[in-house]
Length: 107
Image (cartoon, rainbow, N blue to C red; front, side):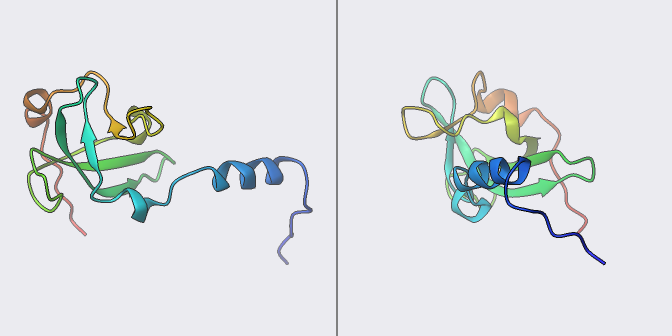
């Protein structure tokens, strides 16, 4: 038997937060800039870790989001509600990100 949550309490708070969130599909292929407004890449994919963490696969140096140097960074590193309207990775540079290990998927 499955328990069905009663409306109210923490479930209402979660529903409100979800409604203010972003769909992964809407963020895919969006450009990512640094805090100097320099484009550093595009969102290629998302990884949902078994530990509950979410990672963004970023195509660094690619302006289509389909190739480039693929890296995985913690989703929480991104600033989605920047006044510029862009997705911002504060403190990042393309050169520094290109030195990170390449993300390789086995699935």
